[in-house]
Image (tube, rainbow, N blue to C red; front, side):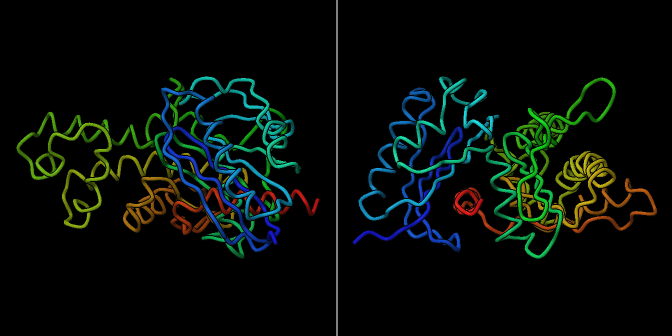
Length: 309
């Protein structure tokens, strides 16, 4: 006899997860796939079909949700575009997924889904509102108020990555994303090739920020300076969020959040400095708690809300 459950799908530019879970958003079963961008959206859809088919052998779906790595129309379930994989633009992802599992399926941006996850099951539990920031290859944001994702008027979202840091048009994503930190590290290594930090980075090209953790633990001045510059920009951007929305907590997720306490402490200090005195100390800052499960768990929560609506 099949168990009843909710289905969730996380799809981005590098990984795909298809999960089934219970009403408490506990993941009961999972299928993982590595995405081949060369196969485009069609290849990813084949993987989703395979994962769902496997789970349908064990679970009777109640509802589903998809966390998509790019802009979507959450009301229609249609993909607006994908910056990482070709072939998604205009695709009716929600209707297509509905045809696979036979239940309603909600589609949302993966940062929004992650925000819901951290608000209800992670570092934002018991806090309201919750603002989530994902610091990965890009920078994304999500706002949860009263346990629900806040979207704003179409086509609005909590697009922190596209907030301008100055009048020339420099964005948060250009200064605070993983690739921008990688670029800062490469520039430093080219200028100071004999430094200890440069030797630790070695010949790595891409993902240089992974070397930051050990360097920060040792107090390496170059790593400290690069983190401080990034944290100042992010804290400045989050001061706008604070003045406009007043979240009770800001949760930092994504690959750069693996830097942990040094990142949290640096951003918190910057945010307080840029926050008007009447609102200090401002929101608490927390590192995301759910790791690679943040989007799958958020999908299960979103699917559950779809049934409860």
